[in-house]
Length: 191
Image 1 (cartoon, rainbow, N blue to C red):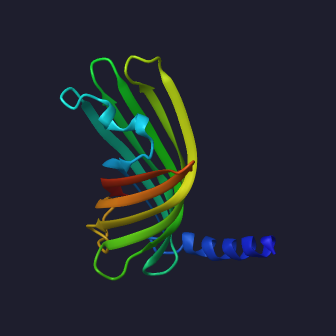
Image 2: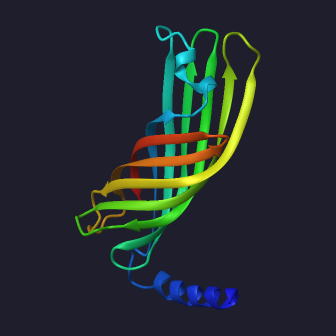
Image 3: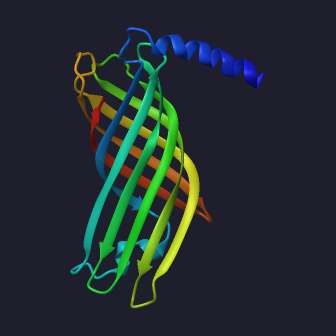
């Protein structure tokens, strides 16, 4: 049965890849910023720092690859990352969060407005030094869901580069009643 599914998928994708439809395969790459508004663990919470001397930088990246199924639906997969750096003069709590996702992207017919629903799995690595303790490294894997909403400014126009503005919400349980909720906004270029 697995071989039959692979053969039919191959027979469906190859003719479309060489057709005149230039939007069969697309990809984009962008910069993001966001907020992990609940880590579920007290040792990565900014309340452990003196609020008057806290420095924080949140920066990330996102990249999507998608294949057209029909006029409005795409198979979507990609990777997201968010780097959260918090520090004071002597302490820090840095997190690197990345996830891989795969799902469906839908254009409901409102210009370049689209949304996606995807399954994701990823890792969060924390690098900590709080209250003068020695350096601590911890990481955890998990899987969950990613929901995005974006606007493709040149969706129906014949241009090589199309700007995109969007945002996503990612929910990943990490085990032991720890849940990561990440809300990000991004700007990207679609090629």
